[in-house]
Length: 262
Image (tube, rainbow, N blue to C red; front, side):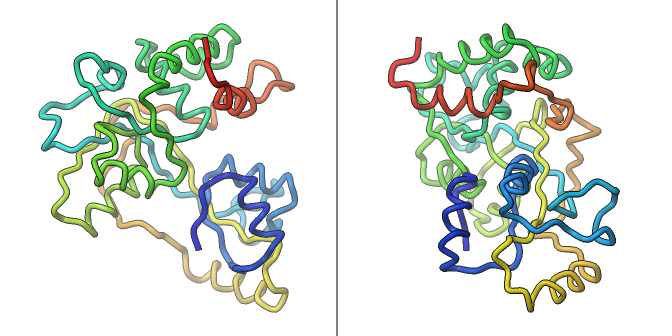
């Protein structure tokens, strides 16, 4: 089964338990939130690489990058070009994720990649990111799952989009007639993890544990692109909110629901 990446959707699906699953594939941020809400099983020590109690395992490093169709754009655009609606008219795809969207907005506003975390860790930096995001808001098509971004580009619904590197490479293998390209500079690191839902049948828990210890899972094709060492990238695990009582995700959600942001 698939889901839209929203923690509330996951919570509702698990409460109904209409389509029971054994393993979930989700990003690290969502996994942490789901773990705190008691939606995932705490894994045994022999499946973890640390002593910290957690609900996820086997991290896969993905990246959110700028993607486009080379038949429509004949150069390598940057995030600054992504914001240039006047010169490159058309809608833009962005992941409905606070850290990703705000980081990209700051990159488009000429903040160097190595200063993004520091900038987003201050109230003035957050305000700067939202002001930049407001400029593009009328042209944004939000996506929640990596495959959404792939189809936005394939179906000509956007001129450019942020996209999962691993997902779009896999998508191109399935559709070799596509002419997608990825900007390798200034990506957002996106950790993907596996978790086991609390709704799993008790009889299957040991089977799943044994399977995971013997057979590592990898749902994407292998790639030689090493974004973390060859190109500038922003690592989300280095980010901390300027105020522990303030949630960047919550601010972002409230901004999304504003009808006419100023």
